[in-house]
Length: 153
Image 1: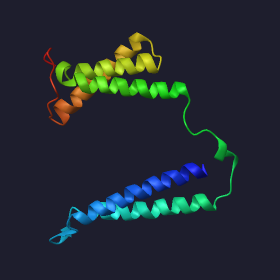
Image 2: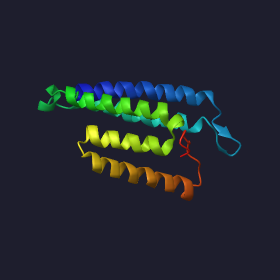
Image 3: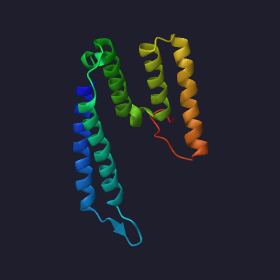
Image 4: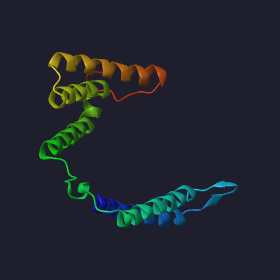
């Protein structure tokens, strides 16, 4: 894991440098309060410190048996991630046309049936329960309108 930690630390160091540079472009203070450049600047500084520690630690650690272990998931796990991303993309494409409730129902049923191996009846039940729960939370508790589809809900 030393090599992976080193690579991750270098990536985080690059992101922290970007955050610091972006934070310096904005005002640090706004009157007597922190300005829009305050948070990215200090977030970048803290991330740079942590990334530097990780890189330093990766050089100081002794080699272990985990260093030669594969860190990437197997093909089956990557296929599952790809299928989830495909279903998410479909969700984003049809949510305005079909409506939020029906899209959430379809999404939950597809995930539970195809990826988790639930029976179709149980998948439909959980999809309906989750969709109804989200509807009640957004509509009555948060008083927000969700996208309506061609069926009116």
